[in-house]
Image (cartoon, rainbow, N blue to C red; front, side, top):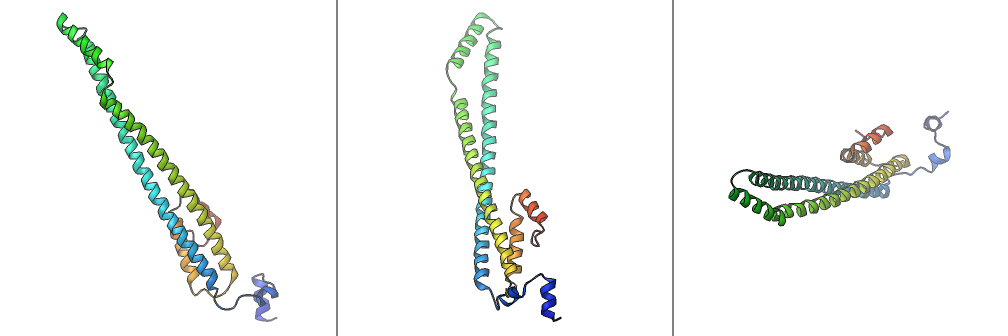
Length: 196
């Protein structure tokens, strides 16, 4: 038995696949894999920027909600104070407090109205930013999966890569760290040699 026959048996290769195996470098496939990795990196950068924008919009929404609550509390405390004044004191003080209370209830206070409008706008802005971040995450995950699949094909195709595949595996491992936690765990469970 020759060494070639032994290796064919050990690695479950047919004699035809050995004869047809590419000789030399597979530069075209490596270049395509590199372009795919570059695209994944661009999408991951975009995803992270959109997630950061979504977090900023959410913080702005919380701030607007706090301002709305402050304005409502101020309005309610002034209303309560005027109601109590209209029930205590002499006739003139009660009449003045009742009149101020009626005036306050008749008009819509500008700061409270502005706070309500701002809060509604920030909610819509936060929803839009969150949706954009989710869409970017989905696109990045899809392209990442395609890159992983193509890298596996390139590894199996044979040829001489001169270390390029190892570096691409390393970049995929780094990019996997920026995917949402569930996706990185799924890649690690799949047993890929770059998930870590």
